[in-house]
Image (cartoon, rainbow, N blue to C red; front, side, top):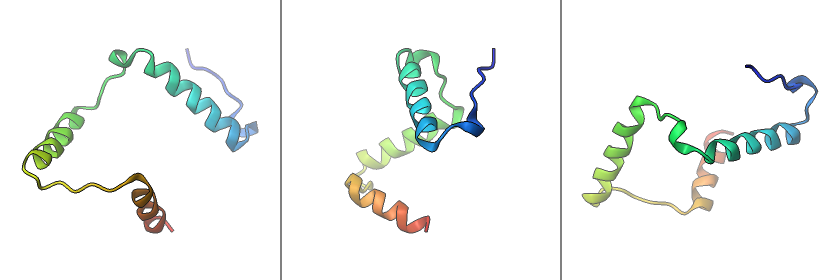
Length: 72
């Protein structure tokens, strides 16, 4: 069953709210949400870099700032 939402008539705020509601619903049963096959490989690589002290971390504000600058 494909839900019908009047996307063309919804405001951005309404669309974001709908996405948040969907995400909240999906989070109730995370075992039912399959991860893509590549995801385990990426996470394993990141975990390895942390163990080898080759990873670097940023606080959220700095990361958001870099993303904003990169997408302008």
